[in-house]
Length: 438
Image: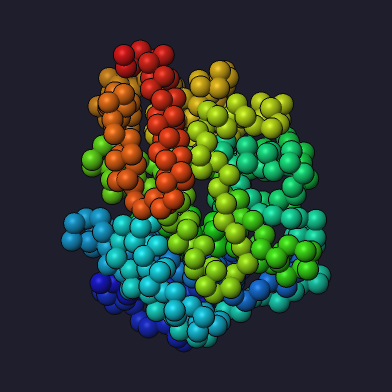
């Protein structure tokens, strides 16, 4: 088991050894060989908020950054099976006592999210919320906001934002502001001209040792939720009559459930960042410690094609749809590949909604016949074809059950099974139109 010790005080950090990784939380940069930091850009972004930030929500944000540090810096090569790691995480919080009763629940949530075995401890001496900075320009104000919406620059989050606006809501947007993502997020918002407030930050894990960081970063969504919880809790403190602001997590039902396309994808290749079981565990933790935020995925029972067709602001959506990003490889190459699972679901959704897909895809990925003939690029496409081919005879309820616990209430469970069925039908119809399946 690797111990990752995350604390803002350098004097509280142990020296690095084969089994111990010290990480300075909110540090500016690694201070010596064998050291690591995370979260300074997040702290800087929080310090620009106009309002007092609640300590409990800030501690959850610190916890989320510590989880990302461990996920990033502990190589999966250390795992006996090359995948599932054993991680002991020690986190310095400003007020650790409320968190001790929920640590086992958090460990279960992280096991479900990342596939790793976690043991978490919290200690004192953590970073308190940064003080207000009266002289800072362009502060983030939540005075006119009434909810929070995660905003990645993807198609689903754009539709979520547009639907909220059309329904008279005034969300503050929360973004992972990776350099390439941030530019696209700002471009889309500029085109829409909605005038919404936006909080954007990047965790920026940095270390001074080999090997390279784990690029999977299966737990990065907990940062997203941590920033969203901070916005919601801050909003609740403003006495605007909103006791428990809603944190909207816009994700189509097929991707949220993300059933394994093949047996080998049950663990390594099936992410669970918005699975209802994971979100419900995080909600339970927030409720237990008193963070006033309510997680809601408004599209949990909607396919991506249905989201496009039913968007309440069709004109604005058409103006930016091609600039939204769905591809998992886009951060590395600056172009959507057209052949990964998210891209294939995206392309199928345009086909289902009977919209022309004007997205600029990588040319070798745009022609799926060529992808199928290329052994180095066809893995995701082959998995999709196999899953779509099995669909007519598949026991979809049993398939969905492989993703993890589902709601106990029969109608809610059946609705999730049905949305997966409809979403995969969209994929099957698209692949059939591409002459890849009969």
